[in-house]
Image (tube, rainbow, N blue to C red; front, side):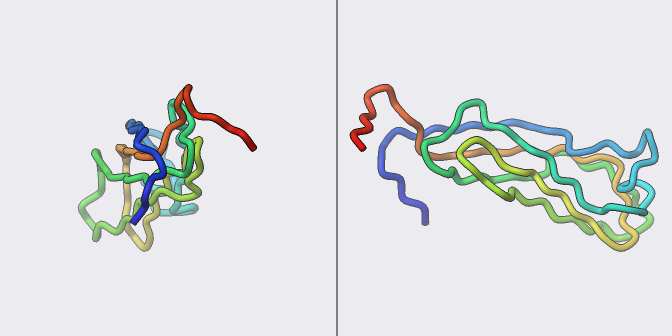
Length: 116
């Protein structure tokens, strides 16, 4: 459990297209080459400490001739952003993926003092 030192909480959220490989025959659609995409996401404002990030798929366009294999994660989370990482493997073919994310954490306030 993450416990916050202040009652000043911030919530940031957004949506991002991670890739759209169908139109140009990219690796995720052809099933060849790199089967991971890592997209940097930047928060609208920095958090005071590293926030909790939840990420999920809101659109997936996939080929139905094979099993759907996928993993989505928020990695390398900092006070300023994170990497949205999508992975697939084997013969799964993905045309496009869009994700939504929510970050919750401590935010600075103009009344905060730094006496160090």
